Length: 397
Image (cartoon, rainbow, N blue to C red):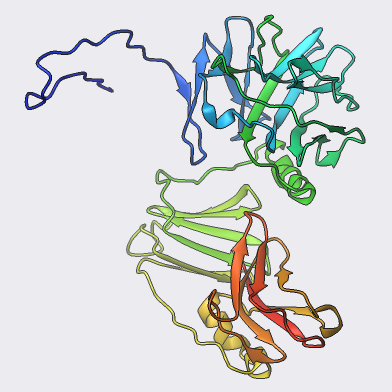
């Protein structure tokens, strides 16, 4: 039971108050940092995307059954970048199958038309621009869509691949009339005939390799019996470990350890009967073996001053990090005048060596570390000397 109470504190200056127009609506949660959910207008169906799958999709859209977010100034993108992505599956082809619609002076619209083409519209100078359309959608197939504007250029990606049609667009997307954003219906009641899930919208745009990575990672969630949530009853992760030999992530909670490959949960280790407590506080995993502890541990590791010595400390690194560190090399003939050195996705820098000697971290010293949400970059305050080899010792995350 949830209680909503409206009252005036007796110590307040106001002697009386009036409360009016209070409404309670069913909503789907927003799991981003913004925490701004979507209202469920009418009644929608939520069902697994495949037999036995934990991921669910919405369906049953009509002019009285859809998802809506009241006016949100965070979605006033102006002339800046934006991204809308998600997964859809058609049950049939209406004249217009709306995916997203935001009316007003700066309109934004995404939908699939009766010819199976995905179309992206924006408002430019008060006139709707020509559609970006070159992706053909068929009925009964899950497809990943991503519509972006990057540095004034509109692009569409389907299943991680860019559609070979782009358009320059610097139109202002600001809803002066404070119109809501609707999903799977537009103002003309053109509903989406099918299913939708994993919808996201942001005021930034991912790179091409990030979009490809998202598609390749998420597509396994649409297989039969695909699990994607933490097992057990606790949702608070208290310990993490990554086994780079098996590409498995171990997530310990108060009642067990869920094991993930990518976004899929492939195993669950129930601690009952194996430890004195189900409450996982520490996990280590390497080469297909794992250790689960119920007491938190702290390990300190001091890197060697010499790269030669650090490369010989595999056992010590494994004890401290759960696996030996990997060296990322940037050869001297390519480092002259270069300040930024970017690692592959999934790797986090631990120590940096310039010409074989340990470099200090810190803006006032030698280098800083930046993370764009996908890759880590080591940025030197002063470019290494021409001919110096750079080695970044990194661990899997």
